[in-house]
Length: 325
Image (cartoon, rainbow, N blue to C red; front, side):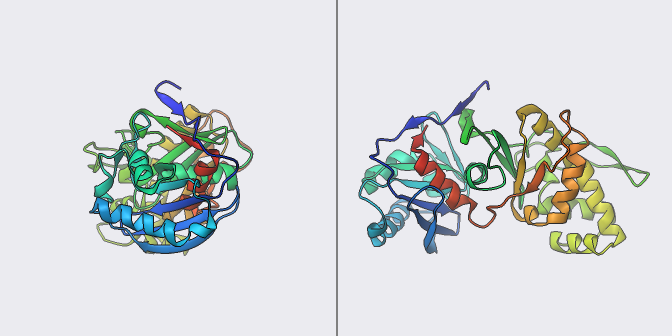
C-alpha cells in the first residue's frame, strides 16, 4: 500500500511481560493491566488533565505507581488516545487533549515513566481489538468503521495496524464523496453537500454519525430530533424517521462499499454509538453488500464486539505485540 506502513519494529522488552494500558479521552482516562494476551483487568478511571502536560504525566505516573505490583518495572504502557500519532516521528495531535499536541508522546512519556510507552489513535486501537479479540478474529483484512458522533475508521492486515502518512488511515469520513441525488421509496431526493468541520463539503462525516442523522432529519422534515429519537421512531415504524433512515442508508452505503472494494476487507466491525443499534447495522450490511464487487453470502458489516472496552483492549494488543513506529 503506497504511503502506508505496518508497525513492526519490536520494543526492547524481555519475555511476555504484563502490559499496562490506558484509554485516554478528553475528560477521563481508563487504566488497566493485561497480564497476558486476551486478558484485561480494569484498575481505575480518573479525570484527564488534558490541558497541562506536567499534570498529564503526573496522572499517568501515579496510576502506574499505585498499581506497580500488577506489572513489572519493564512492563510497557500502551495508550489509546483521542487523536493522531504520526508514524514517522511519533508526534501526537489531539483537539481533545491539547497538552499532547506537538509532542513525541511515546518518547516523552517513556523518559518520564522510565518504561517503554506506545500510543495509537483510539479508532486504530478498536480495530486492533476487533481483529484480535472481536468480530474480526480470523480475518486477514479488517476495516473497522467508527460511527459515533462523527465517522472514522481503522485498517488492520494480518492482525496489525496499518498506518498511512501522518497516521491517517481508514478516515472514510472525509472527502467530498457523498451522492447528492438519491431514490427513496420512489421519490427523488436532492441532498445538499453539507459543510464539514474538516473544511470540505459533502463528507460522509456530515451524514454518517449521530449528528449527521439529526442534520439529515432536519433537512428532510424541518424539525429537530435526537438521533436516539429518530432511530427509536424508525424501529417503531414512524414514517418520517423511516424516510430519514432510508436516505441515511442510501447515502452512507456508497462510500463504505468503496472502502470494502479498495481494502479487500472481509469483515467490517462497526464501533461508536450507532454501532450498537443492531437493526441499523443489519440494514447497512444489506445495503453495502448490494454495492460491492465481491458479493458475500454472509454478514459483512456487523456491530463491533468490543464496543465498551475497545480502546483498552486494543492498547493491550499493541503492548503485547511490542511494536512502535
